[in-house]
Image (cartoon, rainbow, N blue to C red; front, top):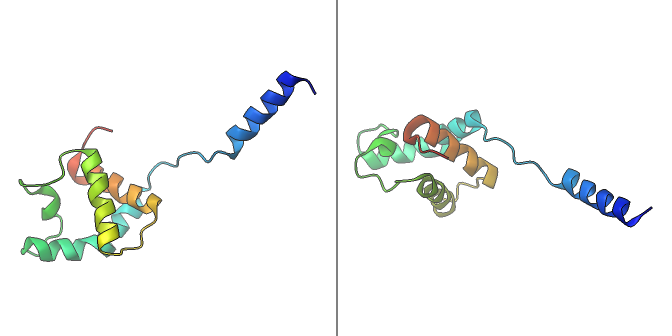
Amino acid sequence: MTFLQSISAIAFCALISTPALAAPDLANGKTIDQQKCYACHAKKTGFGNGDMIYTRSDSKVKSLADLKKMVGLCNTELRLDLFPEDEADVTAFLNKQFYKFKP
């Protein structure tokens, strides 16, 4: 095997062993939001509507980066036990449904 073939083989192995980033699962994000987020948000708004927290005028979330941070903060602080891919799914769902930030 030549040096060039060795380098090509190593590069190929690196490519196939690197996991591809999966597209967010919006259905999973919606399910998690309904099961783990909605009731708490409904209580916080005082109106029994958990979606109102996402659409309020004094929202702390002003960008997609803020949304990612907020989902991560809720996960950590409330011990929701979400995996990183679940956080990405919830973020993607909330962005598509409510915030509509550009990626």
